[in-house]
Length: 91
Image (cartoon, rainbow, N blue to C red; front, side, top):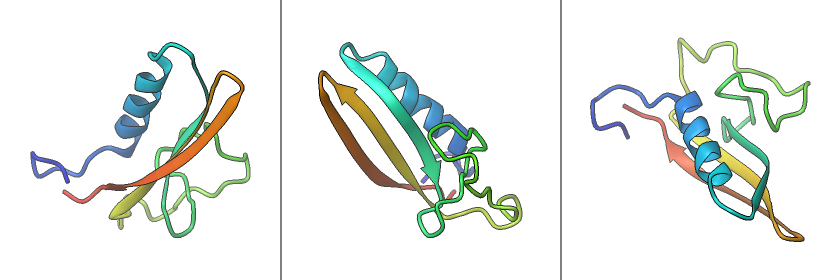
């Protein structure tokens, strides 16, 4: 949850995760996406790492998702790592 009482910005969270991975030597990022964990709708409108047909939540501004799923795939050497974690998006 955000310390200031404001809802965390999903796009900022995604950008920070991507920047952290890209700044690490030896990591080649395939994708970083922040999606609604129930329907996998893109919460950032970035579209990066999501199929072009991936839906974007139309009601996101009126009823923002309380949680986001941060999904990452990256290569370290010849190994492809895939992981995800839930992010609390409530104020």
